[in-house]
Image (cartoon, rainbow, N blue to C red; front, side):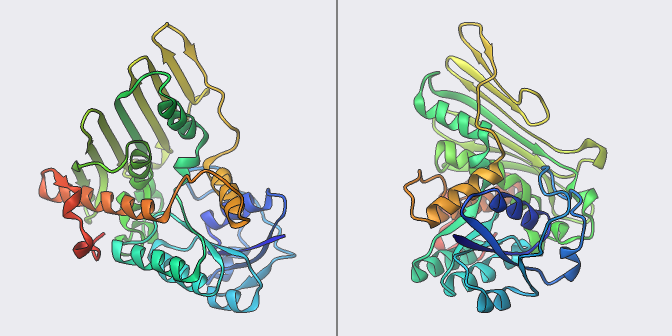
Length: 348
């Protein structure tokens, strides 16, 4: 039996709880949160994606006030780190040092230096550090990745990605809208698509970004062109929408002999238009990216042979790309990725 603990029991902690509870041979043995109210809430949806709503049964789960207490008192194999972003590095390093495997939510950390510290802690401990870039596991995104790698429809000519939310209005005054704690919109929201762009195409040579700031400061909307030799790749992210807007994530991928079109709010979500004139709804795996990434993590902890979907080094590179995007938007010009060397690891 794989014994798992969850550090942080807000929206994402409850999502991890749901996903782990659905797996055979896995026990959620303990949870911790500094706010005792987190355990008694009804769990109304607070994130962009459904799946963490409703009451949770914690009768057979040990409840702790902090991570150190949970690690000291419980015999755990792995821990999910679902605390606010500014705590990711210290909590992950502490858990790894205690001898458990770690699944840390995205973004990896607020800056490159902390990300490197996390990787080094995992190396010293000889334990797995997986970062929760769930978009790589999202069924429709995973189908697109496989179709591109198979080459059935030729090379990618152009790809656009979009992710829009009302976070600035819905979570005003919370840690999400405090850039010192969340990294702001680029690290909390837009990095999903930045990371998937890296997953599809590798590291870009550079980025050209344009941003819009809120009245109080901080980027709330960004549009980026990722510089590749023979493919146009653009991603747009923003959380300045008004609450009735809801949430949208989309992509359009133009290949030589087909077009892939995804819209989270549509049914069917994924469509394939081919050069032969067909319009198809590809059959994707069920579930969502959270359930697939957590099942993948559990299999890796057990030592099973599974495809390498995400590495900690790739998660660090996604931080590096977002840092370049911020800098490009600030300077109003293209920024090369090689400008973000180890000497700049203290920057977001």
